[in-house]
Image 1 (cartoon, rainbow, N blue to C red):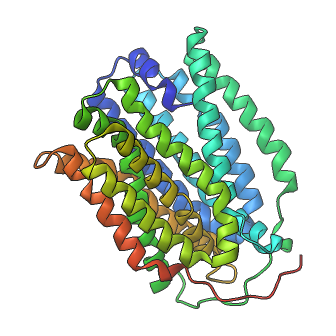
Image 2 (spheres, one colour; image 1 turned 60 degrees about the vertical axis):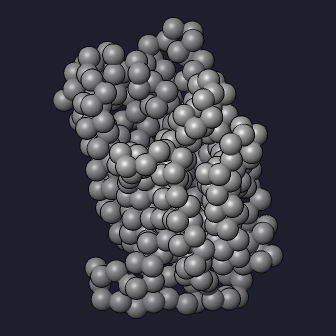
Image 3 (cartoon, rainbow, N blue to C red; image 1 turned 180 degrees about the horizontal axis):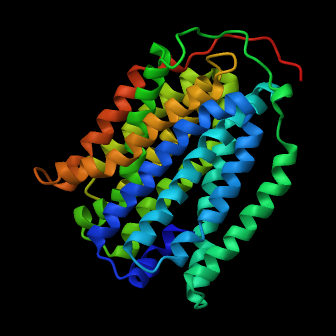
Length: 364
């Protein structure tokens, strides 16, 4: 809902594109701060409470950009909005790890699939309210009400701390330090989310520039990527249950690499769109496997481990689009796509980092 209203809010606050870009860094900084705080607090007080608190904050904070009348007000609103978003991201993924442990089979990718559906639903609703002439404040206020109701209804069904199942295998480390495994998971999350960030911001422009298409046709690239990403997330859990998380990451990244190679070499629109679709399909199940592994590393530290891995991945997501922008100063945009291609190949080489020990079913 925030993204589709960016042009209207930019006009309302009378800021330039460059100023908006700087303010978006405040959103990112707030998100990273929220991630790092939410993890340890989830371990101490329970992820259910943190989901409720951060979800409530995020629902209220989404109104902020609609109220902003100038640059500094928008910057403050985006910082708070980013903080709530980052905190909820870690808290809900931590809770998802416990639910998955209790459920006794992989379901994390399906949770991320619902996240994708939420993004599509928000964009469609936002587009409809804009077409109807609603102001950003009214539209964002309506989404805040929906968010608050959803949080109130859903958090009562989440697992309390007393019901959190504990993994049999855990790592020990000095308090406050990153274990080698956490760093490795974070590094793989970094390269994978960097590649995803590139697709989000540059896929449409790559097709438009490389094949000289219209903007409407070029948008099919991101549409294909998003569609296969969503569908893949709803099928990855069954594949993970049958073949294991390492196979999801290794073969998924190889599929993504094949798709990106096709994007780079293809001179035709159908094969280029197929390449972007394969890229989304290959990436779809990888990050959920990393998050699940991070949440199962240590007894009582799922939130802290999650916050570190998610934080490193989020930095990659932000760095990807900027990196491509810098590279295009030297080479054409299509050639710059070797960066995400290299990222997914690196992830394929280190797919074994998501290997988890076999545990007995957990009763709750």
